[in-house]
Image 1 (cartoon, rainbow, N blue to C red):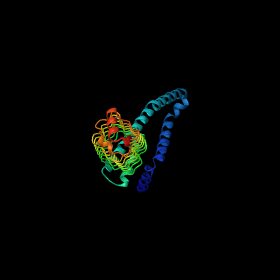
Image 2: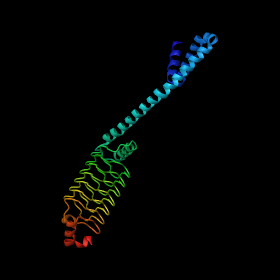
Image 3: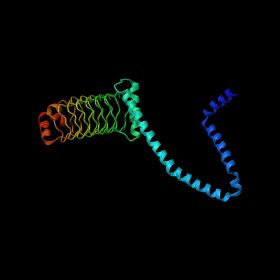
Image 4: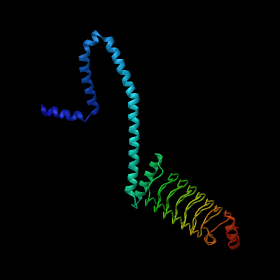
Length: 274
């Protein structure tokens, strides 16, 4: 008998909804049984008390219930965000297809939670699709984004020193005020990319496509523009720029320069800018 009761009890506690209904039924029988004589002799008074309790219950649901729900939602959201960040940390420095696509998934999930300042140092993001992502203010130092697609991505004010963007597609990307010293942009597509005020010291744009790119007010000391297409690129206000750098470019046709640089270019390499 005891074994049967124990077995029934173990089965019962594994069914929380059924258990709740049984407890509700038992309590209903107990309360009504104890209150039956009052129902018969003083029903009006009990009715008023029940209404008062019902109003109190509504108030509890309205204030406390909604507040608890709101706090729980915030807590769960923070927990999910922490999970995405932890997963990025777990896959850091892991060079594999799985790591790349897991990182992209977590970046996009964080963006959906309106988080764009993400620690991506050394992350492997090769051959991934990051179109339109917002990584403003993130840290991408030494990350590998070669062959990645970042069309219209927001990379403004990011740190991406020594980052690999070889053969990446950065068309229409926003890179204003970014720090990209020593970064590799070989063969990269950067058509109409906005790099205004960026720090690009020793960046390598060899064979790059920078048509109509905005490089105004950039720091360009020792940048490599060998065989780069700079058609209609804007170099006004750029610092560290020399004729020797630009002479190696594939095209400077209709590119915009400060007057002093333009005079030197017209004297030494008129064919590239004409």
